[in-house]
Figure 1 (cartoon, helix red, strand yellow):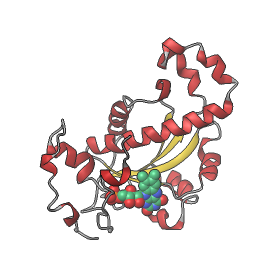
Figure 2: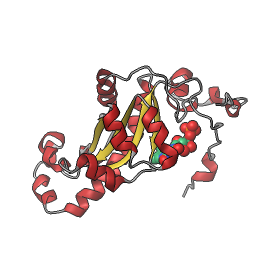
Figure 3: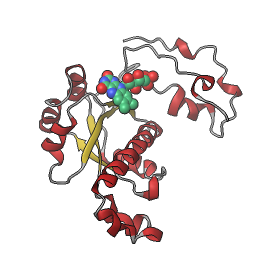
Figure 4: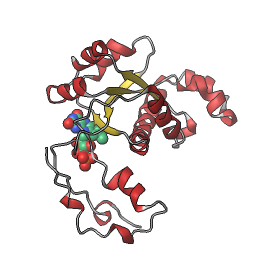
Length: 213
Ligand SMILES: Cc1cc2nc3c(=O)[nH]c(=O)nc-3n(C[C@H](O)[C@H](O)[C@H](O)COP(=O)(O)O)c2cc1C
C-alpha cells in the first residue's frame, strides 16, 4: 500500500472558482480515491438509504431514475456474487463490508405517472418500445452511477466500482425475477489507510478534452 499522493502537490486548486469549499471539493473529487481495501467497520442500511436520498436528486432523462441496487451483504450472497467476478476483482468483493450490484430497470415506465406526471401518457408508448427502454435504462443508470459514487463520498463512505464481471451470470443469479439488468458492482466501506496500492494517476487537462466552436 502506498501513501503517494504527491500528484496533488503543487497544483493551485485554491484559484479555482468553485461554489463549494476546498474541503468539500477534496472530499468529493480531488482527494477521493477508488478504494480496494476496507476496514471491518460495517456499512448500515441507514447509511445506504441516506446515500440514495442524495443521489436520487441527480437529473435523468424524463426523470426516469432507472438505477436499482441489490445490496450484497451476507457471506453466502457474497460467495454467490464472487463466482461471477473476474479473478483480479474477486478478493475485494469477498473482503468488502458491502457490495452494491448497480442495475438498470427496463420497466422504469411503470413509475412514470409519479416520476413524470406531465408525461404520464408516455407510459403506454414505452410499453411497446422494449429496445428504447433498455437503452434509456442503461444510459441513465450509468449517469446515476456517477451520482452514487459522489453521494457515497458525501456520506463519508468510500467506493470501489468494478466492471470486471459476468453481468449476464449476475442477472441470472440474482435478478431474473425482478428483470433488472446489472451494469457493474461497487464495493462500499471505510478505507483501510490509503485504501489502494495504486499511485494517483494524472487526468487529462481541459485543453485536451474540449473543443470550442
Ligand atoms: C466504471 C468503472 C469500472 C471499473 N472497473 C474496475 C475493475 O473491474 N477492476 C478494478 O480493479 N478497478 C476498476 N475500476 C477502478 C478504476 O480503475 C479507477 O476508478 C480509476 O483508475 C481511478 O482511480 P482513482 O479514483 O484512485 O484515481 C473501475 C472504475 C469505474 C468507474
